[in-house]
Length: 195
Image 1 (spheres, rainbow, N blue to C red):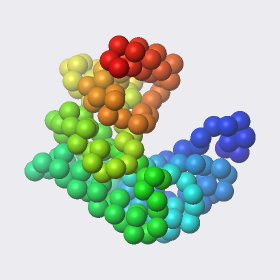
Image 2: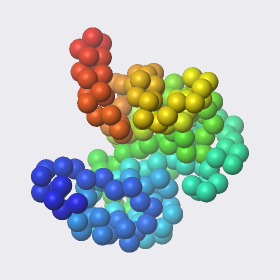
Image 3: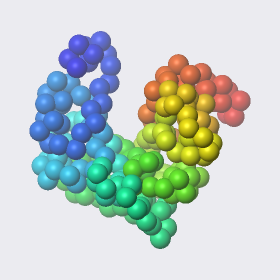
Image 4: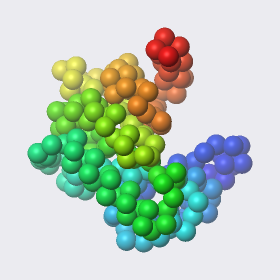
């Protein structure tokens, strides 16, 4: 990590564990991406608060082991919105500046295909939270579910770009991708045509 940081890269670490966060921050990480929105480890909010890193608060129903067992919502968009609003408030109360926060609705984390599609259609609703929005749809399994056939993860690039476009590329500040060059080309073209 230190070599990448010295080369000018912004390093992001995916973890729910405060001890891993500490090690990553010491090695130069600038972003903690926590799928539990700083709820899994009671000390994680203090680790982030004591640093100057950014943090991504993601929504997930259940745990990684249980999240897809039977996800249920009465109103997925409003429930995810309210959860993320509450987590932002907790972070602000802990002294984490709002400009260090970003959110992720958690596509594929405790959600059915119907839930995922409802969230993708409603990304603009999350702007009222006043923080950057990160979207991670790259190569996710919902793409093959929409297409109705098995598609190897490495072949889901076009579906990933379509999902990003459907979510409203201009509603997003950060996209998490596997195919960087293809995504950059997609954004260059769509921005020139649509702006």
